[in-house]
Amino acid sequence: MTVGKAFDESVAYYDGWIKTALPGYASLFAAALDVIPFETSAALEILDLGAGTGLFAEYVLAKYKRARFTLMDMAPKMLALAEKRFEANREQFEFVEQDFRQFDAQQRFDVVISSMAIHHLTSGEKQHLFAAVFHSLRAGGVFINLDQIKAPSPELQQFYWDHWLAHVRAQNAAEEQIQASIQRRLEFDKDDTLHDQLKWLAEAGFPSVDCVFKNFFVGVFYARK
Image 1 (tube, rainbow, N blue to C red):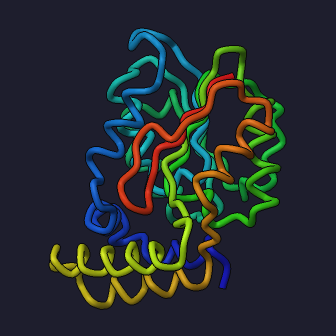
Image 2 (image 1 turned 120 degrees about the horizontal axis):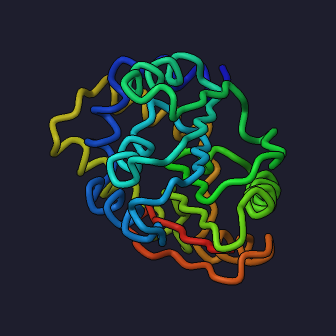
């Protein structure tokens, strides 16, 4: 099974699940919005890589009402839900069914966003994507990536895993959804460390990079061209 098909199987409950499963969900997305360095009246061109159902884009649209969005995802059912989400703003959105590993940076954007998607790529694929994102951005543009982070030691990795399991069960998440998530994590996740991801962003050409917010194994990466 591909990662796209795996997430299509979760489409009926994904939005509710991600809000339950991510420790500090609201604070993570609030931090991601806070570091977009443009006036709210700006008519930005925004690319969302691995857009899924459009949750991140929805938060950005609420703040940047004149923005235009390109949502890219390889899971057709997830993307169909995103299209339905933005029916009232259809003229501001383009939906592209594509594996973002094939992203070729032909168009130019002011902002590239991504949430809980890039960790499905290998280390080499992440480096290639970061370079493509850099080339796709206009001068002064930003890349905001909310994503998983591999702990720097096996002890911390186990601590993060145990904390996550305790968190989702404390939220009374359905055991079936927990087990499906565990299976996806074991099969598809390829997390890399904070140090490596920041290094690869800098090597891609970004002169200003940081992890501006972190909650256990999830962080908000900021890179400005």
